[in-house]
Image (tube, rainbow, N blue to C red; front, side, top):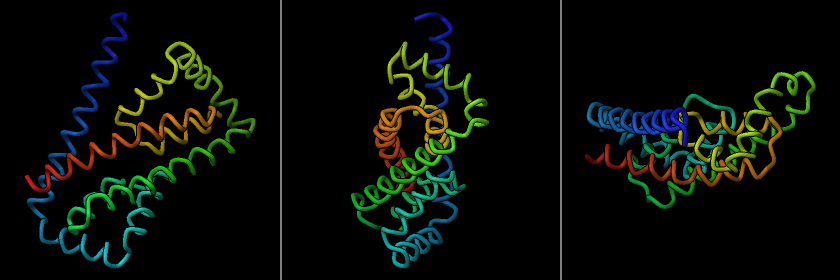
Length: 189
């Protein structure tokens, strides 16, 4: 591994660590400052919209890059005292379906000649990286603090194969699980 690659890898790891540290600080502060309000809101939200509402929120967040991320729905489920497994499954299902929809829509839009021209150099760069490193490079991109929906849209618009989305989808699971663990620790800590 050359020096530039080591440096980029170190920066990527530091970005991931910093984003999760920021999430811990944010949830800890919000949990401390607004615990009662969030508990009431979480209970109300899940009672009113159920787990379908949690899944729908995660779907919208990862389909159209809605400003409320799936982690909000994880926090809502935790604050509302709902079962861990069901909250995780609802967020994962919504997130994965939202990502797939974003990928498929962007892939269809990528057929446009003007979009294809604009993305040609980026697509070539990513294609060469996949040829050199396999899909491990794409998997590593999911560890960067880049929105899942943006990654899905970009790979779809570049008309990468569905296998590329499969890599993103598989890598989404540990990121959601890690987010859940961080939120639980921050909320209860």
